[in-house]
Length: 304
Image (cartoon, rainbow, N blue to C red; front, side, top):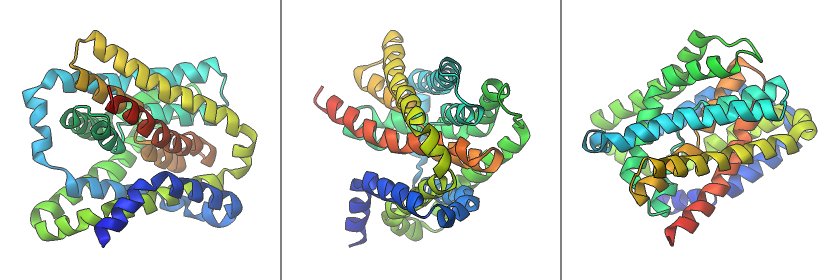
C-alpha cells in the first residue's frame, strides 16, 4: 500500500507543486511563517538521500573517472557562468540576480537520476556526478556564490559554508549511518521517502511563494523567463561539451541532465537564511521548471 502511495506521489509531483504554489498565493501570511523551517525541510530530503546512498554508487568514480570528472566540472562551471551572464544581460534586480546565481552554484538535484533512467542515459554516471557534486557542495557552492554574487550583495563564505554543511552534509551522513546501523529501518523508510520528499518540497515552495507574493506579482514573468533560459542553456551546453569531450551517447545524455537539473532546494534554503524571500523565488521557480522540462527531455531521449 505504502509503495503505491509513494509511486502516486512521485508521478503526481508536479501537481502537488502547483497546488503548493496556489496555496502560497491564497494564504501568504500563514505560509510565510514556514520560511524558518526551510533548512530543516531540505535536511529531511537530504537525510533520505543518505538512507538510500550506496557505496557501490561510487564504483564508477574509480572505474570511469574521466566521465565523472567532466560531469562535475561542467556542473560547477556552466550553470554558475550562465547565471552570472543572464543576471548581467537582463540587468536583474540585485535580489533576483542573487537568486539566479544561487541556483547556478548548487550541485545536481537528485531528481536528475530518475530523469537519466527515463532517458536511457547512464544512470550509474548520473548518480556518481550527483553524489560527488553534492559532497563537494560545502566548498564549491559558497566559493562560487562569493565569486559571482558579491558585486550585488555582501556574501559571507564561512556562514554559507556552515549552512551547506548543516542542510546537506550532516543529514546525508546521519542517513548513511542509520542505513548501516538500522538496515531494516532504512529499507522500510526508503518506501516512504518519495512521500516525505514531495511533502517537504511542496511546503518549501508554498512558504517561498507566500513570503514573496507581492514581488512575484511584480517580477514573476521576468523570473520565469530567465529560469527557463538558464535551465535550457544548462541542458544544451552540457550535452554539447560532453560531445566535444567525446563521451558515449548514454554518458552525454546523463551529463546534460545533470548540468541542467539543480538542487534548487538548497538555493531556496540559502536565500531564505542569508538573503531575502525574493532571492528564494528563482530557486522555487527552477524547481517547478526543471520538473517539467526534465520529463519532456527524458521522453524525447528515451526513443533516441
